Length: 188
Image 1: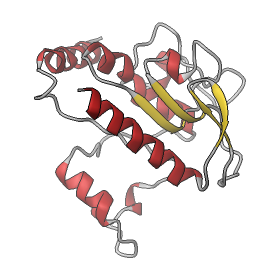
Image 2 (image 1 turned 45 degrees about the vertical axis):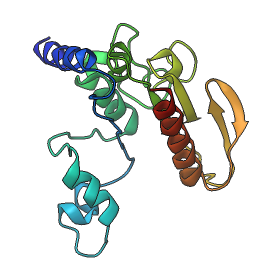
Image 3 (image 1 turned 45 degrees about the horizontal axis):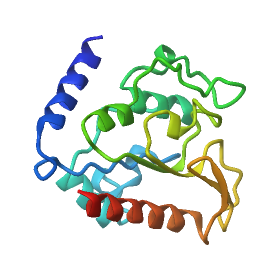
Image 4 (image 1 turned 90 degrees about the vertical axis):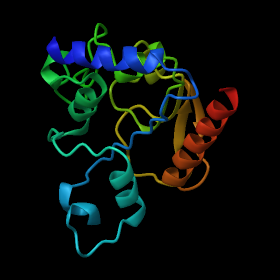
């Protein structure tokens, strides 16, 4: 409860700021990436200068530890709580869905006046009310379940509607996210 109170206080402060003075917040959460996979954390073989710049000039969570599978990790990030508290314990058979009484980071951002979007893999529930649009995200483009390895023009979802992706999915997700940020900026 203490952690939730601190998070709520932070978002209360953000909400009190004018739209012009609030920081833009972009979060990258990647699957299957080890801590030592980036040059900013010591990898000498891979050059990740753009990611290094984001880490240097932004915020890097160096004490956030992932779970062995993706759904519990996402639930922990989305709620700020250990995954058993949100009843996420698996990647299938309902074990990937967060309890509906859990508040997500997207819910808090929306309450503070932010536009919220998620792009890429969700894997915390496919149907409403577990769908990203039911968990605080204004915009969603990606896939709600696990990924099956089709990286070129796969079937995806956009706000609950099935759509065909446009080319390499990582580039497609990036394009959609950039368009969302551009539209959000134009509205503010």
